Length: 184
Image 1 (tube, one colour):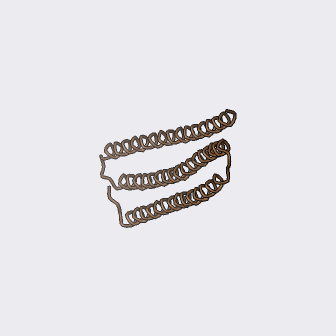
Image 2 (cartoon, rainbow, N blue to C red; image 1 turned 135 degrees about the vertical axis):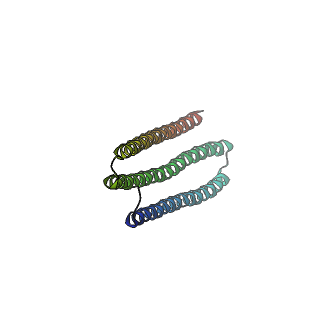
Image 3 (cartoon, rainbow, N blue to C red; image 1 turned 120 degrees about the horizontal axis):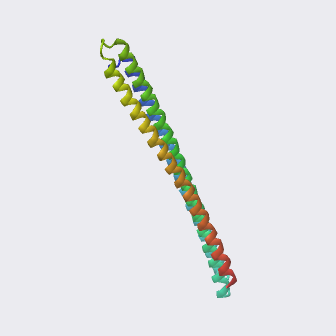
């Protein structure tokens, strides 16, 4: 089984395009993460400046404590939202990269099948059993990779739903805690 120059060129071009797409996904995701972090930092600085100014205006210690509790609850809500946004960016990048890998493996499989079929046409008499064994092995390997990909996707979906549930539970717990603190 041999590759001709055209097949090698096509395989190289496909690999190069996949590398460029990988780099683009990585850069886009990094850009979103950096922007998210900068926005959170700016907002945090503004919030802390505002809080410091407000605390100087309180005359009663109980009012100040109530206000601090309110600020703490808001900070936790913002942290939960920020974590959710970070997770969405990372999850989106992981999903895009998974699609890229699946596409690349699929294209490689097609090239390999084409090469095997080409070799079968030019194979000497009596090599049918060997070529059928190669095809069967390749089909089994492709099925195993497909099964692994599906399992990985299920794990990612389970993780996604678990993170969302945990985030919602945390946000609800913070709100309930804040309500209990306000009534005490």
